[in-house]
Image (cartoon, rainbow, N blue to C red; front, side, top):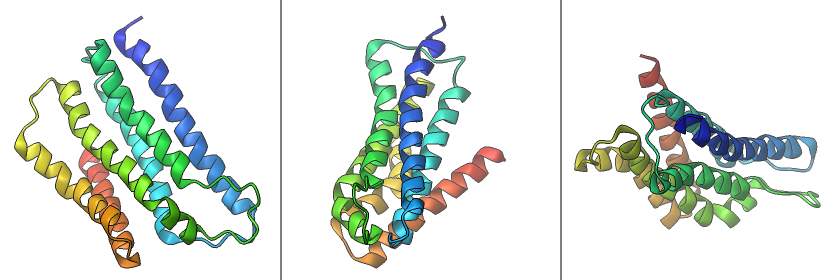
Length: 184
């Protein structure tokens, strides 16, 4: 068994649980007619799916060069675990949906959800370092902070609706640009 195959088993399990959490939650939301939707919540759910797929793709693209020890194994699995936690936080578990409001729900979990996402982005800087074996440069930190971490940090600190919307849209635009860059 190669190191990637060994790592891939655990990676697949954790990412699969996160994706299942999101898809099952969206199914539950659509199932109940009394649920009031909130676009920021919906955008973060789509972004979480993108982050799951993107992380899987990133690991697949380095499968030949992956070198593992216990520390790198744990560090590399921290990202998928954070994605699972964020999916669990973002997607409500309706025991009695009644007149559920996803806006109210989002704002009740906003700080902890966005804090987990922030840690995921910070962990991403170190994942890149572990995967490539290169030293983390100050310009890399600034690039990640600009495109992902700073808007999320602002959204943690300020609860205004326009801030939440702007942060989610900013992160979504960064995600779209990263996909476009990957394609070309």
